[in-house]
Length: 263
Image 1 (tube, rainbow, N blue to C red):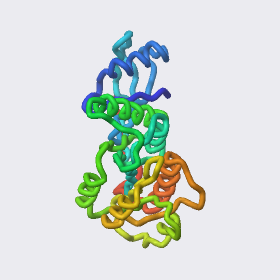
Image 2: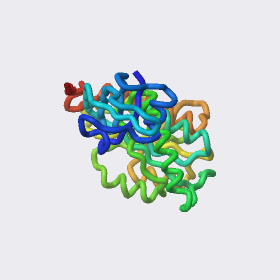
Image 3: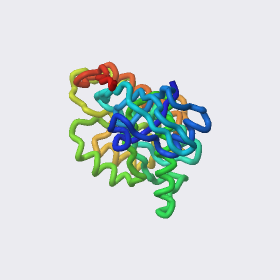
Image 4: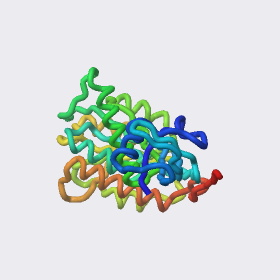
């Protein structure tokens, strides 16, 4: 079944229309028409099976056949990612959705080569959001990550200080730092962390002063192994480890989807 995206405020009723871009893709690219079924994600846990009622070049009207709500897994995984150049950041955005990241915080750090001028911020954010949406459709992830930033480390630490039920790790190339897997294995499974977060530096890594600031903020330095990884590879590896660990701790109120059917 082909998948589409529609924000919650657009798809809350039993009959609604897809956005113009999604309608064009359905009708012009995929040649879907009345009677065809499709699946719609709302980015907030909703999975909707719908039937097309009417279709034109710029408009597709659908009726809900079945609506599911998928609880967000807990603890959630957070990625604090320093800005990366071009395709590298796009890769991190895509894989974050595929691996189920709950929140993605973009950081502007000392060694960042990539920069986002204020005049470009709105356009960049729109592009990043669309990348997240496309990845959600591809992976059938009903939850879009909350996208924050770009922001300074000081801003990120201020935000982090407001979150008491979270554990923060920071990737480090310093000698003698334990691996993320070892640190997680030594953590008591009944520790009530609502979020597990990892910070990954840019192509030039975090500066020594930034690593010191992470420690002061309560972050635990971790290693991702003996090899030197590209920043985007490090992000994917760290998130995959955290996501796997989080699944073993999943204490969501109800891990199964709830469904309703519209006749």
